[in-house]
Image 1 (spheres, one colour):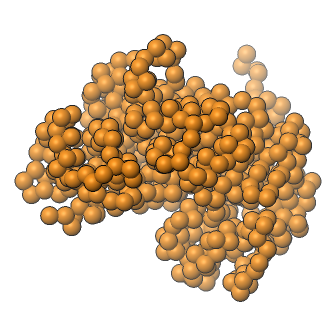
Image 2: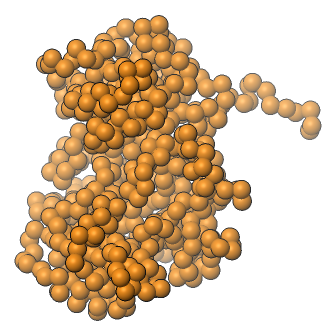
Image 3: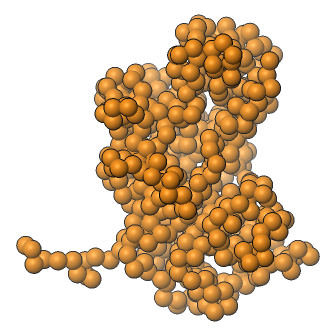
Length: 544
């Protein structure tokens, strides 16, 4: 046996980039991308990606292997193509949230040392302002992305090196794309959303991306040729890996610039959508849309990004959405824990089924280990659904580390072999995990620990509440007290702070009842639908 060693024929590095080549062979004439008036096939998508990769590697742009190429744009066809084209040139793909301000964008461009930036035409002014903050020798070159139905130019276009179509037209459709020399080579650089801390640059290898993508396909039982609606931004952790997964199964990708309830319902009906990913806040938007309609056909929805209230899941399923629930992080590239459904749960009452689905679940099939441990003893917590500990991971999907941040990497990827997530959770007797809070979101009131998500879950059961978030408010006597921020449903009458607090008193221990209730039209969120609790914490400082 000892003479049987790895051989080039059995040790090709794992990479998702080959999915596109395969899709062109199997699904060549089938639609790959639909957006307004744009319709592309898998053969066309494959050819366009090779052309872009070819030009990136050419002397005209001269992007070397391992250099960073950034993309600033929404979920449109060109952004989808760049998820393949950039790494096919041997470069490291860096998606950036187009909703950042110019200063924040400039910080990321400088930190990543981006050499080239593809910029959506709606973000052109933003990108130019961001680049103006950078030293001359650190300014990246800019390429403009336009929708197919946008042909007008402006005076600002002269500041761009070229257009996306211009770069593509110069490329070779027979380009021999750059295969990774080994599967540990970095493929993507994603910055965390920064809801609790300053953004960090997460570096994922070809191996991690491949394992995460296949893992997500397997867990969701993604069929051949689904119709996938991009309600989850492609720039958020590469759409949880579904940018590449949809190529593997020859899906029809329905691209969308802006996510709102009328658009989503219209596209679902028009294109007979079968699958979509959505943060809980997106589901909340859909269920509270006054003109919502029962779906003609069920739509499979994967939700993640924040603990979803059971009431939101229940209301979404009454409309015809079949909601699955998973949990992952930018640091894992996709979902590594999933609430795998058990047939016996079908016999439960609707509200009980929704409660089961609101749990994050158990590790996915291709992930090595997930646990909840006591941060002091390092041992697993009791499987009682009550004892809280920190969620830890171990597996191939975990990042290589934080870019230029060895201290941050060492703090999260510790010598005991675990990746520490910073999320607090419990494990139920059946082994299923439930996230209770970010470690920084736990409220310590007079020595009592309050999990903000437990209070939020109660608030969501109030028929007048549309959105809810609970954060710590500094208090001289108690140290911290829970403060609730809520928005109300449009069709409900006036609701007072006292009424909300009295409602909570009937369902929570006294110490967990919010001492303050702040009403807002809409709670601040990231582009992926996460409520920005750090902004809410700042607001509490000005409250009496």
